[in-house]
Length: 233
Image (cartoon, rainbow, N blue to C red):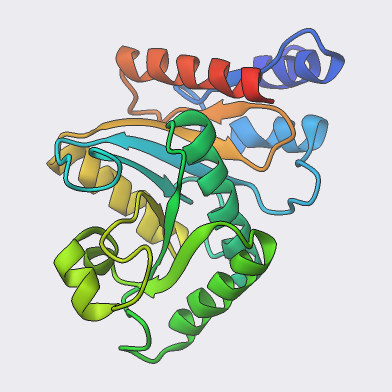
């Protein structure tokens, strides 16, 4: 086991010889997270590990001057309502700690906005929104909402009047991993946004995972993010 650098790094963190770990350029997310979950384990009160992506876009009218944090983009394929609520709270914490977003505005994304469509997957997002508000009563969070209603003020005012996040969201929580992973990569590639992460959430110490399509600049960026997480841990 100690011959595997992924396990060895986690053992170093567990023993106090290291503060965090970054891997993934040549390993799958599962290989990166497995030793972290076995050795370091999850943070108190958290049962669902997830991955957040920091996106620096060229659209300053959205998010916080073009900065958005998205989750889950890497770990849990089909979260239930409780897991989705944990993802929302953790992603908001990441936005505050890493992206400097002092007031995270969290949108629980769906293909429905405030009951415009009826389906069991919409019901899950509605229930997750309720649970997340109970977990973090002071967090500015709302849903279910479509992406345009979350980001565009005039659309938000039309589709979700009275919502504090509609048209002003800077944290986007996807209903499942398909949507999250596809969504961030479309923004990154088609919108030419800088994407840093995934930043693993819910682990007791910072362990971050790179995409195997990462560049040298991506690695440098996530090294800096991991250092910030270590300072805040």
